[in-house]
Structure formats: structure tokens, C-alpha cells
Image (cartoon, rainbow, N blue to C red; front, side, top):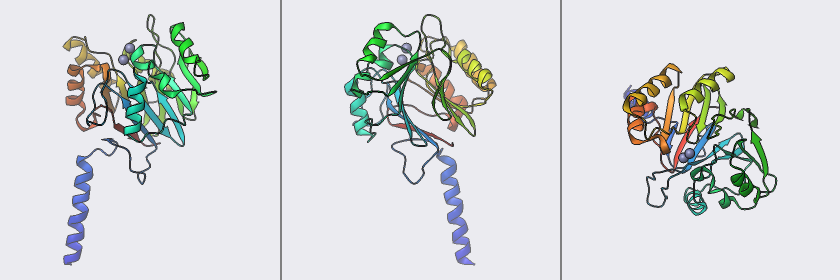
Length: 272
Ligand SMILES: [Zn+2]
Ligand SMILES: [Zn+2]
């Protein structure tokens, strides 16, 4: 009887611990035993929680799922991308694809860190600045301009190309809970992008991670955008990079433990 009570107490303790730590969002490399369906590891971000990681303005993350390894954006400085990948024990020598959201330097100028990548597909929005495309070509990668969504790996696609002056694409990862959407800066507007992605895919949006470009947005607009996320049924939000502190604060307050704090070393996991 006493043993049963102790066992019950231990089980309750484990349940309570699991309830307070969202299992899908944390900092640090994932324990191999957990082997989640998809992991998104932030390699480049404006903040870094540990002294051995370098913070710098820009964004890059590595998506790993079912054996596929996809680099989304590269940050601004090759040496910073290489440093953070090394510090996080993330091996960038084997990549199945690179997806570039838009042609701004804080998302593409870290690309030379990858060196020569003959034949590795690099997906970029068709309207990229030709000078940026020419620089990508120096890697001998296979350049793939995107105007409408293309498959990167089974169940993982680019979005259509968005925007007028700044062309941008997002990455869509299909999961049993809906799409996980990864964005760079969302210059064409995060809400119009998500609205179109949801309508054209016919899938719910489970999570959105990346930069939402709301640094200059007045508080009333930020409030409207957070409300629109809820109306769109977005379950989890990882607003970081160019989202801006005020918008990050409101997303955090609204989403509580369904908000994913950013910074280099953040690992987002989801079922697949
Ligand atoms: Zn940008
Ligand atoms: Zn940016």
C-alpha cells in the first residue's frame, strides 16, 4: 500500500513537471532519445542566451525531419553562422536544401559560410536582386527560383512568392497538427501571408516562427495583428528577430506557455 502511494506521488510529480515545461520549446540540442518529428534549431538571431553563442542582427535556422536537413536563411555574417553552428554541435556539411526567404543581407550574406555546394538546391523568391543571385551561384549550388510553392522535401514546401517591392517566401512544414510556418522578416505582412497560406493549403496553421517585422508598428496595429493570429487559429508563436520588443511582449502575454522565446540555440520541436 505504502509503495503504491509513493509510486502515485512520483507519477504526479512527473506529470506536474511536464505541465510546466512546454516539451516542444527549449534551448539546447534535443536529446536523441526524444526524436521528435521535426526540430527547428535557431542558428542566428538578434539575441543569444549563452556567452559561447554570438548574437547578431539576422536570422537562420536548421530544419531537421525524417532525415532531411534544410537550412532556412543564413544570417548576415558567415563567421557568426559558422561559430554558432559549431558551438551548438550542428553539422552544416550535409544539407539537402537551402531556402532563402528574401534577399536582405541579414538573411543571405552568411551564405559563403557553406562554401562550395555543387548541386545542392537553393530555393529563393524569384524576384531576388540579381546581384544576390549571382553571389549564390559562386557556390555551384543548384539555384531554384520560386514563384509559386514548390516541394523541398516530402511534406515540406516553400510558400508562393509574396510581396511587391520586397519579394519573400516562407517555408511550410506539414504536421498532424497543421502547418508550421517559418518566416524570415515577413515584409509583405505576416497576416496577409498567413491568410493566403491557410487558404491555398487548406490546412490549419499550428505554429509560426521567425521575424514578423513589427519594429515600427504602432501599438494598435500590433494588437490587431495579435488578434488576427488568434482568429487564424494559430496555436503557437515563435516571434523573434525583427518582430520588435513591444510586439514580442504582447505575443508572449497573449500566448503564455504557447509562446516560444527566441535567441540563438532555441530548438522548436513539433510532431510529424
Ligand atoms: Zn528584411
Ligand atoms: Zn531580417
